[in-house]
Image 1 (cartoon, rainbow, N blue to C red):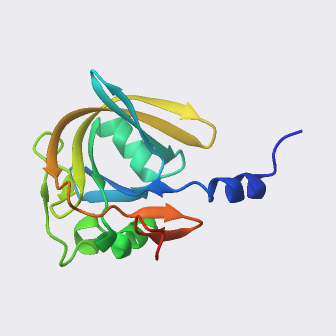
Image 2 (tube, rainbow, N blue to C red):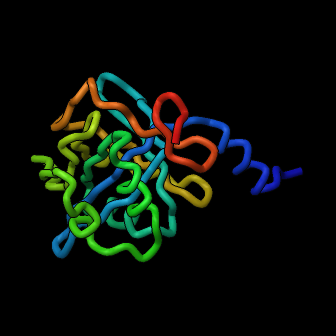
Length: 166
């Protein structure tokens, strides 16, 4: 008997996860989405995996462009995470007003300068997985690394700091 979808979602809300911002630059605009389904896959070569909704434009665009940036968000980015998880959002540049950012060299995508870390990535492959796609990304560069920055975490549907405080 299949697991109830709401029960499955409730169970996974108990799992604390880091929050990242995946950004892409196409010929017209900047696109971004908040992701918390991210995992390290390999150190040699450096690979990470990201879960993206199959219905979303970021997965489609990533397949077409073949590159993106992945910024590990800090506690100061909770509002940014909320903005990029909302439907019908405008250009990524508009959502980042007053947030220091720059472009990653290889992908040209936006990375946040005051984040704990950012990865400039090339798409290795996009794998269909249920109602999502698993993007396997090869890390080409680490344009941002701030080991002292405090990471943003998602737990039980809320953004919290490492002490689990909202």
